[in-house]
Length: 194
Image (cartoon, rainbow, N blue to C red; front, side):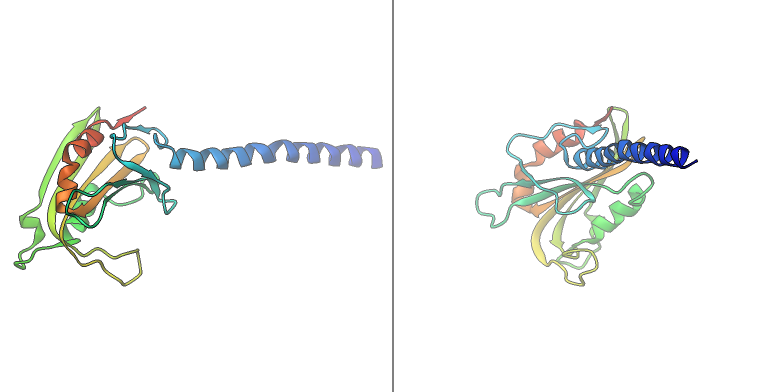
């Protein structure tokens, strides 16, 4: 009986040891997939000139700095967010939230100036928005501290994939974002799910 118990315990120990590396490897691969340029199953081409940065949160699948245009004092920032299957909200809710992060000098609603478009890119439904004004988004979620950056422009998109939605947000000085207009458009149009 003692021999049977010892054999059983040895078997359980060897099984546990065999499973631990597989679990660790799985977690490691998940983290690598979230921070790699091709983020899981969403593939895309990063334009020349964009500076790849280490994402500052686990919800950021990728993060880029777009060097400033001559005369601007700041670079633009582009973030690709992925929150998980069924997470992050609808395209309409995100478009409205982004538009409301921009204020107009004349007090009119930013929605009157925003350009929105729905298109299909390589079989994926993409909803985009482009709006300029004073950028007033919270500096970090829940901080209660808000930006107040006049002369800014926000270009953003919701990319719907079988794995869930990805959210692209580009924000920066209007001239700098304009400098990268063509590159941004090519970036969004390069998205494919495979």
